[in-house]
Image (cartoon, rainbow, N blue to C red; front, side, top):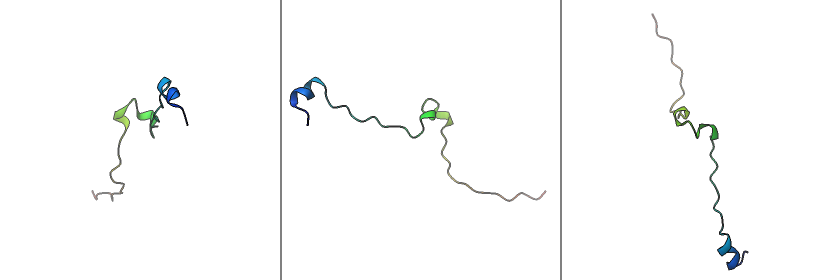
Length: 45
């Protein structure tokens, strides 16, 4: 455990949240959410 003096000199650093998709951080347009996955039968001509 750190002493009060040590904490005054250098406070505790909070944990940085790590992103699950670091490649998409700089380009939000590319980040898409898949709402449903399905197949459609071809329409008859």
